[in-house]
Structures are given as structure tokens and as C-alpha cells.
Length: 105
Image: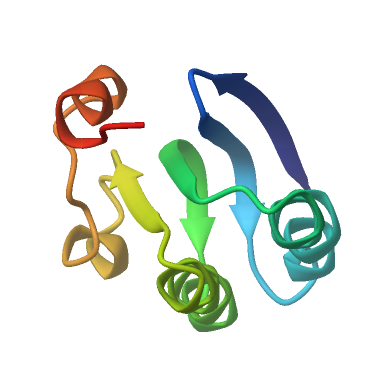
């Protein structure tokens, strides 16, 4: 099961994931996160994976695809958290609020 909480503040979408991101939950990620970002034209996204219990290779592909989508629209993708080793190479924030130091809107 994947639970998604989103909050929009000062032009930045904060997405917090809870549970598992794998082949059974990637459709939830697709419809609740990626489609919302694409349809709304959101350019700055912070993805918080601190509360993910696990992520499969399919889940990692979904996260990387979101990052590519944002790059194509001149947006920026930030990843926070993650004790999950497969995500450590993607992490580029030490905490969510640091994004306000890096993004000028």
C-alpha cells in the first residue's frame, strides 16, 4: 500500500510517501503524483521518502521518470530522506525546508 500526502507552499509541491513503492503501487504514484504535477504545470517538487518502508526497481524507475519530466519543463526535483540504499544516490536535500534556500521563485 502507498499513501501520498501533498502540500503546496510558495510554488513548491511537497510530496510525502508512506508505505511501499513497487509494481503494485506504482499506478497510485503515477495518478496521484505524476499526473497532478503534469496537469498542474508544477515546476518544483520535493519528494520525501523518509516514511517509505521499501522501494522496488519499478518504484525507482517511477521516481527517476518524475525527475526527467521536471527537467524537461525546466523544473527542479529534490529528494529528501531515505535509508533505502537504492535511493541514497538520488538524495539532494538534507531536510525539506532547505529547498527554500535553493529555489528562487
